[in-house]
Length: 421
Image (cartoon, rainbow, N blue to C red; front, side, top):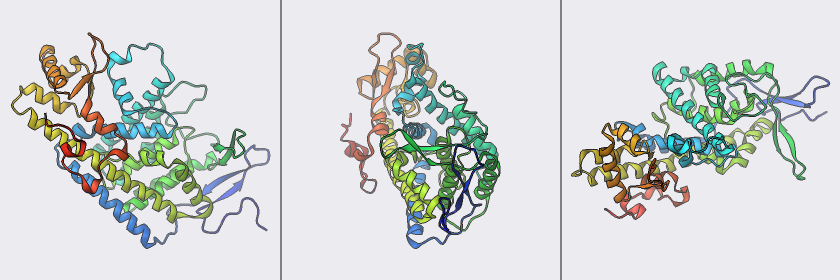
């Protein structure tokens, strides 16, 4: 006789009743990885298309000596979108503005929005520190361990927003987790999914670690999709699982050799499709619908690689245009115009430190760039002025729908209809 805990035989786990007297009726226990899969042709084709899109994006990164000096805003973009998946309204500009002391010190009382921005800053630091660790330990899948994942969680939440619930930074959850959804009758929330019991989490994370580190005959992106599903199903932490899971995707893309710099911001795709994302994950658990999940995930990789390619190409073209425009200008003007890609929000004092000149020289450079419309002062102050790189931030923050098509991308001057000054 079928009961409420029965699942199809091809489901990669099972629901199991908890002890008598516990408030939750059942918890899901995923099977050991890897799952038994026969990849259909359309999944293999989608994986190939996503791999090609990543390769084209990676190729742009290889065009310049220091991708971090040009594409640092992409890490901010991922932090922005990851925060918005969590329900906040943080923007790339908010994060950059927070880095400028003269803006941050104006408000001595921390607001909820500032706490949200700080969470996004934690995300950036966790990602950058993890990449630095991988570069030291070796860019290989064996470098991704449970301990690394726990350190990501600790950095994300150790200085998180203040509340009564301790998120236990860096610690696997000691209790049950519950994933809720809005009740269809509008009566608050109802339980959608209960991840595995806490005493199973260390074993399941060890299994996930072994899966990530193993040699595979599947396309790398398929492995990443499976690992992401398993992590979110285990839900190993009390809070912050979504953010850590999205960071893990970026790190696996790097250790797989798909990217050498975090140019992809997959959180944007998840934010646009958050309901389908949650539904696809649950459908794997309850119905064994791996093919649907893999197609969804791989399509997201491809779409975001295409979008990131366009933004990266426009940034590179804009940087080349600045180099041409200021060839005959004083050296410090050209230096500052190129430094804007790494620090698009700045004070004159910060500009002087970045290009290593005295304050007045930096001020002269800022005035030249302001006169050319490259930067704009955003506070209206006569002192403690803060400047924004207008053209760069326009590329970074322009809605995806307003970007040129990646297959028809033309020179930046035509694509954005910007005058050649």
